[in-house]
Length: 86
Image 1: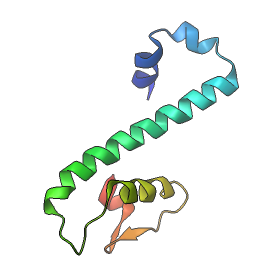
Image 2: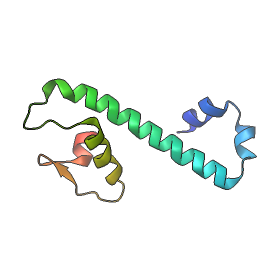
Image 3: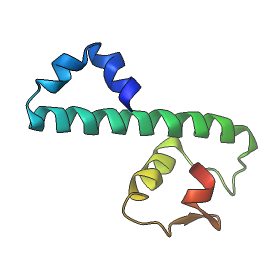
């Protein structure tokens, strides 16, 4: 995460001088973008092996991953999200 913040701002001094609310908002947006990228890569890797029975769209997979933060017992086709995604 630290690398991503520096990649976006290039200077820690700028970040340290940000308002805490602005920093929090930027941090949450960055975290969401990283999650979207991870799920996109996972979806691309899984799509060749998907059939009609187990097909899941990118949006469905992303929604499940976002719910993961509050619910740890979500499963897809009997595989828990913790095992399937991370």
